[in-house]
Image 1 (tube, one colour):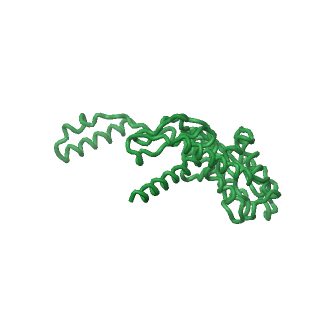
Image 2 (cartoon, helix red, strand yellow; image 1 turned 90 degrees about the vertical axis):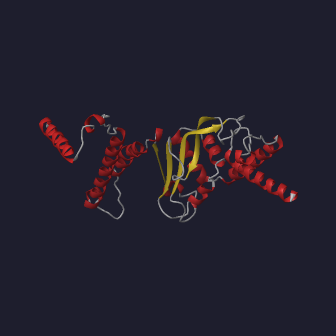
Length: 285
């Protein structure tokens, strides 16, 4: 009874410690048990536990740092140039990321087709913040670079991405040929605008200046290539139209409907009112 209870509680603490260790980087650890475990009160973990979490976190970062090779350095250098951070800052963000393993999965034969990085404001828990009874904390927004799945996170800043050109294993010698890089600005969640600008200012000019189209010897003169470029242009036009429709939402004038329906007593009144509306529209047209 008592022994198993302590063991079970210790297991929960260990699990929570692992989660905290992977989530907090670059700042003093302030570990708190969730409100669901402790009721309405927040309990700060003992300093010894915090030190152990920090030690484990440091070990994890150093193990990942040791795994970095020329392939990782290529990604790091490219990201640093694109986003405007130092290579040291990018490396620190990557080795601290809980999705670090996705990079290795991107390198393997027939691996992930894409590798996404978001650089945007995220809530940063203050070093002395405590969990409230509702599970929330005092937090500040801080710029952060992190690996993203693309389907589970909201993009509110810059999206940088690497795409594989084939299913080959990514090596130090072929990474610059087999991996393509791009990025677009989705500030304030403007994804459509970010994609539109990326396609119209980067991709389409690059495609239209492309000289080598592989097996298609005629290049840009080929009708299929021209049709492809036309469809891309048309898609960008659709993005622009969609964005404008969203930004300029139709706003209907509020009407006091009681004034118009209070005197309608039977079906014939409704028919008369409908005809009057039609006549008014016709006259106005």
